[in-house]
Length: 563
Image (tube, rainbow, N blue to C red; front, side):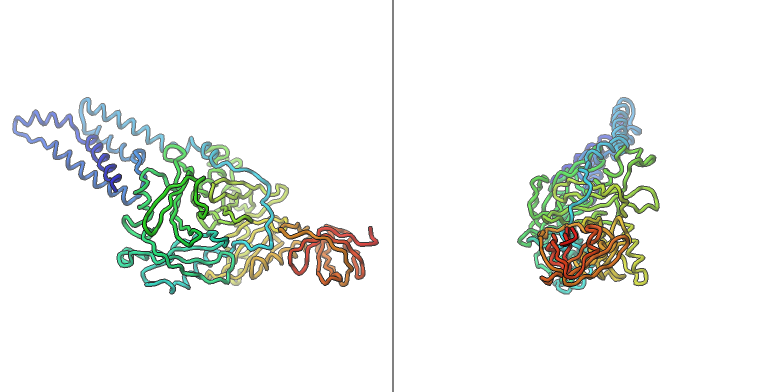
């Protein structure tokens, strides 16, 4: 509070000096001998008080950073006014100040024209072809946020004094090895805050199990986004870090003991109060208001979303738009690629890799209207901000997230179901969109998987793993080879064929067979053309993957007597 008072006082003093025409006041003093009054001190004092109050109110309510550069418009106006009403040498001095502030204002306004290359350099990504194959024995964090919010709202009766509160922003996180959604309870208005004083706690819900129920965790919080005055967590952060540049909303993070913490990403402008570069986070204890700033390299291990999704979305726009500078992003648009807006958090979607690290996913599409082909996709580490851009198989044309959503809409047009949170995975060596499907009330109905390169290959199931099993068969029936993509153990086996079933799909044949060990296997003639000759009582030598499925995928086969 002391900082904002001093800052406002200095601004008020400087403003009063710039506005008040001291040259005219000197002339008035001479005229005062003839009976005229000179109210210079009163005018100065009144101006100082009024501007002090105005500046305090502006910075307190807006939470704007308290750097001198934030005053550039104000200084231009005040110095111009001071130069107009002054005379003589004072007018010249204030005129010079006005011209200097005007040049600085032009510099700030023109910043986007000349710092596009710097933004692109900051947003540079490593490039790869394809993401690692997904382990089909695991379950992706695929419960959609809209469905999670609906379930939490249904469970709101667990909250004490329910009428005081409403559900806050949803955030996904890994806690004690489990992927969960967390959402704080927030005040539903000013008078409810006056009566309630504290937030009673937060909700948690599994992000992988759609059948799980929300749990309300009691943990009182005073400094929250819905509190007012100095208890508002954003204002509290600004009071403690008056000159920091923040980007993105505050987010709730839970440590391994279940204790809540609010965090906010800070950094610096790329140049001239334009653009943003991430540097670290500020962490707030919502119970007692204790704050601490961390550089990105020092962020506590329990925090997953150190880089705000808003900052990642901004970084994606730099990388996609400014590859050849600012003007190319508007006119020629050579090599420009636009990040999609289908993400669940500020146009990006949080996902987790096999090591439990969180990344923000975004797909990029062409700036041409009516084109739904994907140009690539990115994964940005949510703790470090480092990003990788995946081009995909350049020999194939991948459908973007909007195209996947349109297929779902057409598939369930009579039921009026829609998709949410499409994320691209590598399933069995095939770039594929996994999308939860919701009904018109926001309740989860199924999981839809469609090939990004071959949209005619699509399935849906009641769970992600159920859809994955169906998808493997759909790929095989489509004539494509199934790549071993999980951590399943590769085994070899000698056995005798007991039963055989063959199904023609396109140019290839899917051969399913039962061995004398009572295990079922499946192979495509694309992988092993001689499989079409397989018959009962044949002895075979196979290499397969122990995935735990009913029909185990065969990678290699030798039929005794045919080779």
